[in-house]
Image (tube, rainbow, N blue to C red; front, side, top):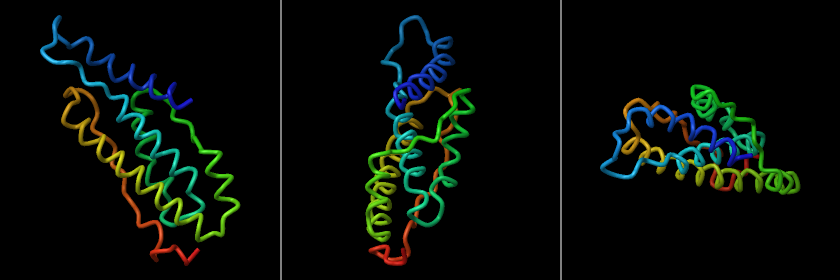
Length: 145
């Protein structure tokens, strides 16, 4: 499912650039697949972890859904079923720590790919969506959960 969403979005982005490319490009065309995959990952972690941490990761990543809509692609609310089953078994604070760590890792990955995208994308491609990071817990060990 993730590959299909990324592939469709890639086609939507690439389609606008193909018409403007010269017959023989001076350098290889930018591949937005890692950037698109980082958005899908960020959104998946946000939806999976929304009920386990504070500050609504799903709401904070809504701009990713809007980005895909601008490309005429629907980004379903993907959840990581394996992680969610584990989270349901954990003590609530343990689930919150795991989610906080997964959200922060996904955010760092997204931010890194967004920088590459900004530096490499054709001018007519949309800017990367703004995504606000945590704090997801108010204490180091998320003991408030």
